[in-house]
Amino acid sequence: MADAAPAAPVVTLENVTVTYGRNAALRDVTAAFSSGAVGLLGPNGAGKSTMIKTLLGFLVPERGRMRVLGLDVAAAPLEIRARVGYMPESDGHIPGMNAVSFVAYCGELAGLPRVDAMQRAHEVLFYVGLGEARYRNVETYSTGMKQRIKLAQALVHDPDLVFLDEPTNGMDPKGRDEMLELVRDLAHNKGVNLILSSHLLPDVEYTCDHVVVLDKGRIAAAGPIDAMKQPRGRVYELRVKTSGELEAFLERLRAAGLDCHATDEDVMRVFVPGDGGAQSLFALAASNGVQVRHLRPSVPTLEDVFAQAVGEE
Amino acid sequence: MPIHDQGYRRYGGGKARGRGWVVIATAGIRTLIVKRQFIGLVLLAWIPFLVRAVQIYAAANVPQAQFLAPTPETFRKFLDYQGIFVFFITVYVGAGLIANDRRANALQIYLSKPLTRAEYIFGKLAVLMTFLLLVTWLPAILLLLVQMAFAGNFTFLRNNLFLFPAITVFAAIQVTLVAATMLALSSLSNSSRYVGILYSALIFFTQAIYGVVYLVTRSSALSFISVSANLTQIGDVIFRLPPTYDTPWIVSIAVIALLIGLSALVLERRVRGVEVVA
Image (cartoon, rainbow over all chains, first blue to last red; front, side, top):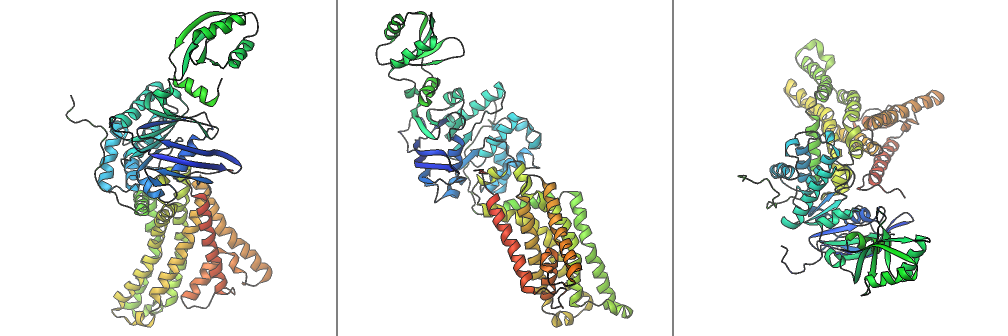
């Protein structure tokens, strides 16, 4: 599947605007999601969930057109939902059912014959790691198990495209790794297209090939992750000692066109555009009377791309 | 190396369309018929049928029990008495139909499947209406058949041919009104208990207000205030009996239609994949 020529996008949005009352959640968004695994990245409130809910037909856009799997969302919502799986962000289940009944019921709702739905429910529950717990009532499940069963109900009817809204929310580190492994396997080995909405950069970086960055209801960046991580310039880890205010030095750097943002430690990451590289940094430090204590070339991460796209410091 | 890898497989079978409401209705009915409490309630609702059947048998076979012979009013009264069971079954079955789905965030799961909102509502309505018809229309029709069987002739049925459509139409109106109202109330809350209280309040409060109005005015012209009085009035007209109240039957019909319309409006606004608070 990976060797195929660039396929048609599975989802396209053209000038889509969605508002809640007076607040615009999506503003004139135009984007294309290619086949495979695409990360929908953005800070909380960026409009990621709104975009997914609009694509599912839960929300009607004020303006714009959307296509999912080549079908117009406004004209063929049921045809789309028959071919799409949705794993919602918040917990959701059918009350009073055990896991296998719940997943089989979802399969039947999606049009599977009863016997097939039951068989698929068992298979999918084993796949997501709930095989041993499949006869337990869903209401007794832990947070991690609830996440898995939401994935199972989204997969039971074998969709061509799956929307995953924050699939690792509330999971412990081991569960999170397993969930990401499942998502990666689905996209890369099982031929299922997926759009993974998350604010967690490592999740997207691990599972997806492409990313669409949303910020304040607008597309801030989009493209293949590998290409985006190779910007025209270099990234350095930098630690300095300054007799004056550090902020003044940072302002100078920014004024010179360098993009810098702090990490958890006292080391900052500085993006130097063009070919200047470390020399530009040393020159700027010298001219401002700042000692460079640590300077190391760094590999650009998705975090750098994200920070640049949403203008984070 | 495992003999069989329990991995994810693509599905090669067919998919049916447009039967989502049947799936919802079937699952809802299946969930309820395994509950002992509920089976007890349904069996209790069939006791009046047994009593009437015995009366019809006695009237047909014992000359001294002729006074028990059925008339069209017998069937009207039978449906009237079933009202209490209609109430209990409506509260038991209907209160949680949508409220429980709202509590468990199930609406987004349902509506992410190839299912319209109308299909979802119709599926839920079908669950409640099935059980309500099971304690109204079905025993009343069976009573008619029992009468024929015990009498050994068609005389009563021939003389009262309107009874079959009358029972069907009245049961349909009663069940549709009650089911639509309960479903609308169920969509307003996440708590089935609260919905049950709300429904009881609607039925008893409107009856109480009418009672007060009647005490003050000494006229039953304003009986349209009460939900159950409207059903009684319509029932009398359908069974060709003198109306219980002074309210014109057309007003009662209008109130019932208004309630069903209002319920549909509430359901249209409340059954959504995402709740938008602007």
